[in-house]
Image 1: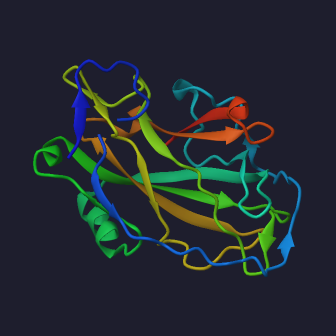
Image 2: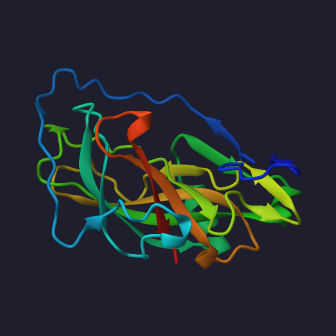
Length: 226
């Protein structure tokens, strides 16, 4: 069930779909050799720094480089990211969500389904050759994508801001093997959005680290989905 707040203004996030979570076990990599690298900028990728407002989002299909936490080194390391598109066809979205067998199960109740829908945003991650990793491969970092309108911080309808709409629920069904440094992987994340929003009026929002991992070094990044 989604919750809404008629009086909320300027909310960054808002209603949460019903979902359930099963426990997952992370592999024990303590015996694995870790290769720790530095940052490598790949040709064709541009600095994420200027794209720090919804009105100035990274164009669809454009590579940007940014730093995010590497689980192996526990340090911010550079990677490359691009949004490749948004899927809003109800049949295709349902097909993907039904065949997904990972940790999340998403659903909308009958009332919410009148005004909301699930969409899927596809994106690519490219790892530099010196991305820190174990011999068995890379543990894909959590980028915590969310969606928001360009015009307002929260999704709105008839003067109401919806709390939780736009939260991201990632699942890896497009990349089936563990990636290695130098690889490019194709990922997808599901979101609940209000149906009346055009895709060109929505942007992806994430944060990245400009320096050491700390709240003071968090930087916003906005990327177009259409």
